Structure formats: structure tokens, C-alpha cells
Image (tube, rainbow, N blue to C red; front, side, top):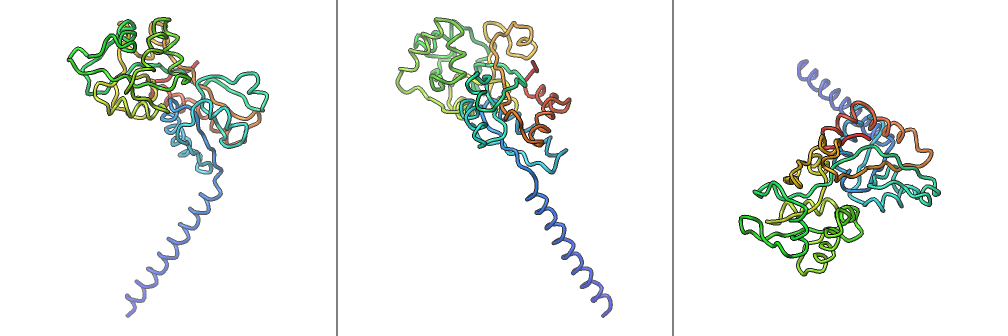
Amino acid sequence: MLWKRTIILWSGYAIVLTIAIFTLLVASTATAEEIKIGGTGNALGAMRLLAIAFGQQNPDVNVLVLPSLGSSGAVKAVPKGAIDIGLSSRPLTEDETAHGAISVEYARTLLVFAVPMASKVTAITTDQLVDIYSGKLLNWPDGSFIHPVLRQPGDDNTRQVRNISPAMGNALSVVEQRQGIPFAMTDQEAANKIESIPGALGVTTLALIISENRQLRALTLDGVEPTVTNAVSGSYPHHKHLFLITLLKPSAAVQRFTAFIQSSAGREILTRTGHWMP
């Protein structure tokens, strides 16, 4: 019957068209240039959001944001060509730039003390933190046990906390020797443990909390709320500098992505996720 032959012809055409479109999509994906990004976990959440927005405007470039490598990992990986863009909480040293890489500060965010969102604690003082880390203060006001979550001694977050005051530095040295204290190797692992351990207290960044939609509360410190406005004014003094590390002569795709970060669209994403620009 004619209508049956027509349906069969149209069905065959639809199949051929679908295969053709799929082939074009696969070919397009296969030929898309790839940018690999890795480094400090504090920057990964926002960088993934930037990568998504960039990809919508630049389908010929595939931006892959890797799991946390740490700042040190990023510094080592870029000159070796293992990644195209490194994310670091510190600039390159003179010796490191000698290997053909450069670092450019692209944003700042707050270093914060955080508790699980379910906690009733909203504020803390530096003196209380010293007492907690030194073991003098073991319980929250509701009587629950305080579980400090620590990073390794050489971590940049730990270094910043240690430098808050000599008393804080001494208290950290004490807590690092206490038995049963949970440690985290990466920023994401630290956030996971602060979220999941009842009574937990740890250090993270406002950017990580917001960009990864973490169920964490950044605590008011010494009466000052941890907001970008307070950080910019200097009333909240603890923050991190974030740097992009690239080769001295990066690829055109890398240049396009770094330019996007500095564009109005990129800056809007950074501002929305707890950053401000230098």
C-alpha cells in the first residue's frame, strides 16, 4: 500500500538523518580541543561553573577540570604539560618561573572556619579556637563534643591558620599530636568530613562552600561576619589569593579561556560564588 511505503521511506530517512547527526556530533567532539585544569581544591567548584559557561559559548573547546591536585601539584604539572592551566593559592617563585610558566592572580576568597549546617553554632572567637585546638575547650555550648578536622601541617590553609597568632600556632601544634583527630588530604575531603562528622569544626573557603553547594556554615569570627564586603574592607582579615598558572606562551584555546575568566560573564560567576577580583 502507498501509505505503508511512504511510512517506510520516511522511517528510513529519519534513521539515516539521525545517524548523520550523531556522526557529526561525534566528529565535532573528537576534534574539539581539550584544556585540562587542576590544582587547589578551593578553586575547583567555581572553575567547573566557568568551564560550563565557557563551553556553551565555545563548543570547539572541551574544558576538563580534574580532581584536586593541590597548589604544589599544579605548579609541577603545568611545565611538564600534564595540565594546561594550574590553580594555585600562591604565586610562582622565581625558580619555578624559570621552567617556562607564569602565574596571574585572578580572584580572592575568604578563609573561614566552618561547621555542619545542622549545628546551632554561628560564631566563634580566636581565643575559643585556641582553646579548642589546644584541648582546653572540648564541648560546644549544647554539650556535644567538638571534633576539629585538620589538614596536613604543610597545607596552605593550615599555614594561614597557624599565622593568625603565636597562640594559634602553638595550639595547632598541640592538636596535631592528639589521638583520634580526623585529618583530610584535600580541600574536598575536608569539606566532606566537616559536613558529615557531628560536632565538626574545620577550615575551608567561602568559594568552596558556595560553588559546591556545601551544607556548611561559615562562622562569624571575633564578631565579624565572613562576607566579601567585610573582606574587601579589611574588617574580616583572612582570605586566600587564587592564581592561574600557564605556560609563558599558552595555546590559543587557553588564552580564550583565561580571557573568559576576566570577562564580565566570568567575573559574574566568580562574584556569585564568593570571590572578589584583585
